[in-house]
Length: 215
Image (cartoon, rainbow, N blue to C red):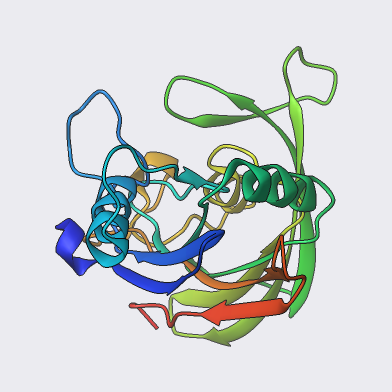
């Protein structure tokens, strides 16, 4: 997937919201592969005719195989305020996923403790060193013969949290072979579908949505 498949949905002097396709990095890493951050920086330079370095920081990140909305801060003040809002659970982040099997309840909460392992989140005991609490809520949207579509709201933001928690619950995300999925897909069926928050400067309520490519 190329960065040209990315799209900027909103931008002002303080924040920017972009859509990341699956299989694109959120930020540059050692691989040298193109990233959403690089695409957005180039977009800002061209759109606002800005020379030199561009201040741009992701407030949250999406795993490479995950698609959807990403919020960036364009100033250090916006970044500080948005980070605080995220710690206070004042940024609503809604995901859509298709998971294997039939989820037995129409809604529920998943609670686990996770350790950041070697490129993978590992379910741990609460007393284990470095274990961090991971919590999310979900509601079932619909069933197919072999899968369940769920809407997910994060209460914490741990590494690979959604992927690890649904796998630990016996319902890995479709296509997510790293976490035990049996059904193969070109990308995992997990999508950041909605962001809602107060603008860090104007305090205006902002809401953004993007449909899941697999629904």
